[in-house]
Image (cartoon, rainbow, N blue to C red; front, side):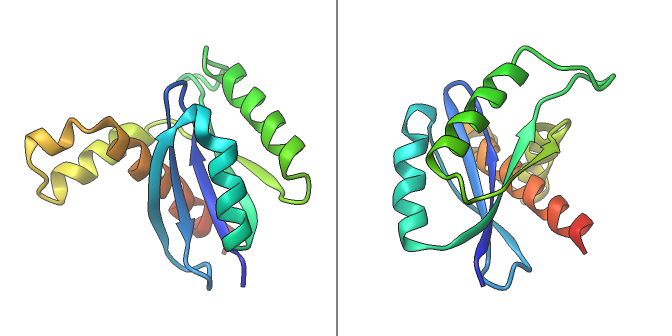
Length: 137
């Protein structure tokens, strides 16, 4: 069974998470520099089948677009151009960074390790994907 992938897109870094082949559990994959996203996805998709891409859509508390919303829209356009056969689902990413940081605290990570923004992005993608799985059922 193909995997699902989540993308927590950022201007500098992009966090990635994937499901297991049975699409039961979301796990962090990695965080990469954003300019390397498409080459990374090409390599990954060549090795692992991916059924759907879940991408976080940034919104303000009132549900309106943020400054980053246009960047995510452009990212989606580029992904669709390169991978037209993989559906993309937008999900609300509000609070995922805060939830990721709290997860780091709850798991006992040292303060120094919690400053790792790349890890926050990867955990955020994992949270988005787990929420998507929960709502999909």
